[in-house]
Image 1 (cartoon, one colour):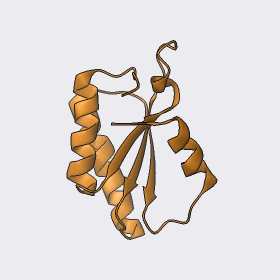
Image 2 (tube, one colour; image 1 turned 30 degrees about the horizontal axis):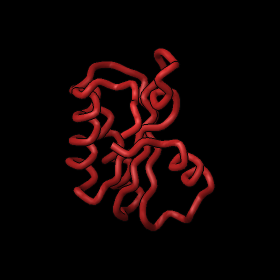
Image 3 (cartoon, one colour; image 1 turned 60 degrees about the vertical axis):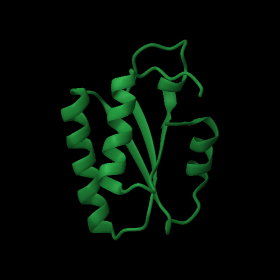
Image 4 (cartoon, one colour; image 1 turned 45 degrees about the vertical axis):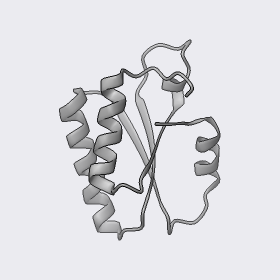
Length: 103
Protein backbone atom coordinates (compact mmCIF):
# COMPACT_ATOMS: atom_id res chain seq x y z
CA UNK A 1 0.00 0.00 0.00
CA UNK A 2 1.19 3.51 -0.79
CA UNK A 3 2.29 5.41 2.32
CA UNK A 4 -0.22 7.91 3.63
CA UNK A 5 0.26 10.47 6.37
CA UNK A 6 -2.21 9.10 8.87
CA UNK A 7 -1.61 7.07 11.99
CA UNK A 8 -2.71 3.45 12.21
CA UNK A 9 -5.30 4.60 14.77
CA UNK A 10 -6.71 7.18 12.33
CA UNK A 11 -6.81 4.69 9.45
CA UNK A 12 -8.57 2.10 11.59
CA UNK A 13 -11.07 4.69 12.88
CA UNK A 14 -11.89 5.93 9.37
CA UNK A 15 -12.43 2.42 7.99
CA UNK A 16 -14.40 1.13 10.96
CA UNK A 17 -16.63 4.18 11.09
CA UNK A 18 -17.34 4.11 7.34
CA UNK A 19 -18.25 0.42 7.38
CA UNK A 20 -20.33 0.85 10.53
CA UNK A 21 -22.35 3.78 9.15
CA UNK A 22 -22.54 3.02 5.42
CA UNK A 23 -22.29 -0.77 5.36
CA UNK A 24 -19.71 -3.44 4.65
CA UNK A 25 -19.82 -2.87 0.87
CA UNK A 26 -18.37 0.62 1.34
CA UNK A 27 -15.01 1.37 -0.30
CA UNK A 28 -12.85 3.86 1.59
CA UNK A 29 -10.17 6.02 0.00
CA UNK A 30 -7.83 8.77 1.20
CA UNK A 31 -6.83 11.44 -1.32
CA UNK A 32 -5.25 14.86 -1.39
CA UNK A 33 -2.24 16.06 0.59
CA UNK A 34 -2.31 13.13 3.04
CA UNK A 35 -1.24 10.82 0.21
CA UNK A 36 1.93 12.86 -0.34
CA UNK A 37 4.60 11.94 2.22
CA UNK A 38 6.68 15.04 1.43
CA UNK A 39 3.93 17.44 2.56
CA UNK A 40 3.02 18.42 6.10
CA UNK A 41 -0.33 19.05 7.76
CA UNK A 42 -3.45 19.42 5.70
CA UNK A 43 -6.98 18.23 6.13
CA UNK A 44 -8.05 14.60 5.82
CA UNK A 45 -9.71 14.05 2.43
CA UNK A 46 -11.94 10.96 2.43
CA UNK A 47 -13.76 9.51 -0.57
CA UNK A 48 -16.41 6.83 0.00
CA UNK A 49 -18.15 4.65 -2.56
CA UNK A 50 -21.32 3.43 -0.89
CA UNK A 51 -24.40 1.36 -1.71
CA UNK A 52 -27.47 3.26 -2.84
CA UNK A 53 -29.59 5.23 -0.38
CA UNK A 54 -32.00 8.13 -0.64
CA UNK A 55 -30.87 11.74 -0.18
CA UNK A 56 -32.20 12.17 3.36
CA UNK A 57 -30.54 8.97 4.53
CA UNK A 58 -27.30 10.08 2.89
CA UNK A 59 -27.32 13.42 4.73
CA UNK A 60 -28.04 11.74 8.08
CA UNK A 61 -25.34 9.12 7.59
CA UNK A 62 -22.82 11.72 6.46
CA UNK A 63 -23.33 13.77 9.64
CA UNK A 64 -23.27 10.65 11.81
CA UNK A 65 -20.00 9.55 10.18
CA UNK A 66 -18.30 12.92 10.73
CA UNK A 67 -19.43 13.20 14.37
CA UNK A 68 -18.43 9.65 15.22
CA UNK A 69 -15.09 9.92 13.43
CA UNK A 70 -14.20 13.16 15.23
CA UNK A 71 -15.12 11.48 18.54
CA UNK A 72 -12.56 8.77 17.71
CA UNK A 73 -9.67 10.80 16.27
CA UNK A 74 -10.24 14.26 17.72
CA UNK A 75 -11.10 17.57 16.12
CA UNK A 76 -9.58 17.74 12.65
CA UNK A 77 -10.55 19.28 9.32
CA UNK A 78 -12.15 16.49 7.31
CA UNK A 79 -13.41 16.75 3.74
CA UNK A 80 -15.82 13.96 2.84
CA UNK A 81 -16.89 13.10 -0.70
CA UNK A 82 -19.44 10.34 -1.17
CA UNK A 83 -20.48 8.52 -4.33
CA UNK A 84 -23.52 6.25 -4.29
CA UNK A 85 -23.83 3.39 -6.77
CA UNK A 86 -26.75 5.17 -8.45
CA UNK A 87 -24.90 8.47 -8.85
CA UNK A 88 -23.96 9.20 -12.43
CA UNK A 89 -20.32 8.86 -13.35
CA UNK A 90 -18.67 12.16 -12.63
CA UNK A 91 -15.14 12.96 -13.88
CA UNK A 92 -14.32 14.25 -10.38
CA UNK A 93 -14.76 10.74 -8.95
CA UNK A 94 -12.52 9.23 -11.59
CA UNK A 95 -9.80 11.85 -11.04
CA UNK A 96 -9.86 11.28 -7.29
CA UNK A 97 -9.62 7.51 -7.66
CA UNK A 98 -6.55 7.87 -9.90
CA UNK A 99 -4.54 9.43 -7.09
CA UNK A 100 -6.38 8.07 -4.04
CA UNK A 101 -5.21 5.32 -1.73
CA UNK A 102 -7.76 2.70 -0.77
CA UNK A 103 -7.65 1.80 2.90
